[in-house]
Length: 356
Image 1 (cartoon, rainbow, N blue to C red):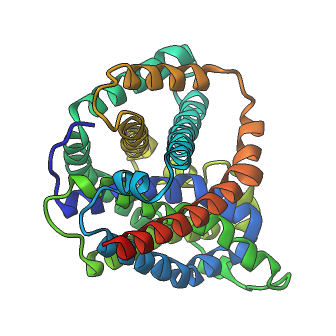
Image 2: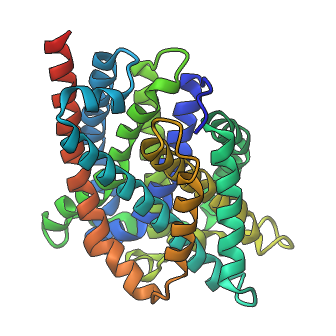
């Protein structure tokens, strides 16, 4: 990504669009499947680890003092270790982009692109993402800033528009089967939210300072991005039916009506979904390219990463197998990886302080 300065407001919006998309779309089905009716209680309780994690991220940010996390990694660790960590990070961000890309292709094919070859849809998505990354982080963040207001408006539209379809009694009783499921849900909520640690990779692009109060506000916004659609799915479809749905957030659009004559408003969700997917794919692809092309001299890196991503999403994979992969492997491993990454970054900040 090109070295163009952005402001902290851009980072907040990028987190809302990228991490919010994961929480809003990917995490809701997994939390429902693992925690059942108690899912909404788990999400509310998740505010404690969310705030603790946000505070740790801000602590590291302050310790870095606007220095680039990658350059510090090479300063405090032996080069072989730093290169190994860089390779792991590149693979991680590519995997995150792949998951978003693949999920989007499956959703599009099921709902409205049955007659269009998957390659055409995938090629168009990777093309616009590639172009956005070539233009730089400033372009990606500006696009996120412009497309966020309609995304928010459509979110309120489906939320308040379906009030007539909601039965609040379906949220109760809670803890019917004990507390095991309640705690199990933290694996998925934290796996999604803990991604905000990636603002540290954007530190060197910042022109101003990140403020803790705004990070806390972003934390609560992300909490609502998962709590709103999750409670909506339970109240509109019931906990049993909601668990069976692979995309309960999208299903809520299908029952939305405005008055007697305006129905089938689910086409508006296409804008919401593709906006979030585009920002998330572009951001992850951009960070992966930034890590591998840290010197700025590897012009081949972005085309190679983009082609690899396109080839990966075109590999035939059964939708059910993909969802099971997310549920039982990707999200738990993702949480473990982010916890390890936090430890590594804390070590870097400590060693930086000792060497200062």
